[in-house]
Image (cartoon, rainbow, N blue to C red):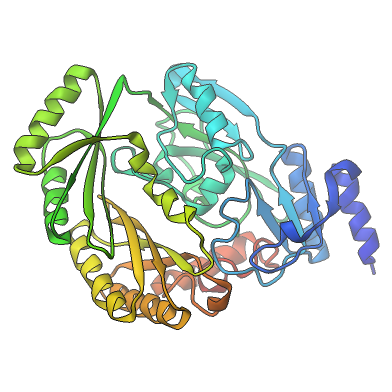
Length: 420
């Protein structure tokens, strides 16, 4: 029988002593303390490390920038953190083909800076771009306002390489935008929270940087008015990039719209918008309003729940009305940012028992109408609060896929929907 010290030495030998260390309190994942942290230099080292851990029955926690490591359920086990910090290269920017191949540990902002040298971008606006890595953003399927015009990550990724628990490096997709042949591994890995394999590299389709941009905002009296404007704008011929509703329990409600075009195009779009929406008080806003989701995390989070909301665009007013109806009698204060596709971020603050009751009832009401609420952050006192909500009919299929990719439950055990 191989001893624990022998396994440790084997893992250490794969990445080198300088890149293998004992885990500290700062490496804890949702209260679970791992034993070791390893930083492989390349995807082959990572695959060998993962295979060795899998054979030894060691639970592996993949980590990029660590910005979303608290999302999802706490892991059932956490032995080894595998960091992608050294896998940070932009491998190939095929600017003429509007594609880029990049390693999973590359910070998102670093990638954008390199793409901008050729007037291009990955049309994505996830949280904390300075620290968030490509692999982490893919694993959590994080996207913001740009999703309205350019699609979600599943629409932007065209190829991926995954290190599987048995040591296989599996690749799917290609370097050209029209390549759709084969098993759709990129879409399967996106949003899987690292439970199927560790992303080592990805290939994306790109878009040109805009000539100019402009954000306009206007206030409305009610969430019904906000929804009416959102649906009217969506049903129009306006070529807007982003559209969102911001508000709080105090009753302040703002609608923001983002245009990208030439200066002449911006002027024409603004004129059409004013005609469409009618008599509202306009103001030109800073681009920073599109970081509203991030702003919900800037205040202290010890007594707050932060959640992701998903509803139909035509049900935004109903969902927000429901939130107000349930939260106000319990003295729970809230703030929200909801994008036009019906995806939003929600922050709730209040006394612990009230917070739990509000989240559970709002979620129950939403799920009965086909919507969802996923908890991204909860106070320590609310550890019993369910993160994902109802799994629905897909759980059996998801468990089957997990069994195929990770039969020993090595990767992020218990973190995904249904304790997968």
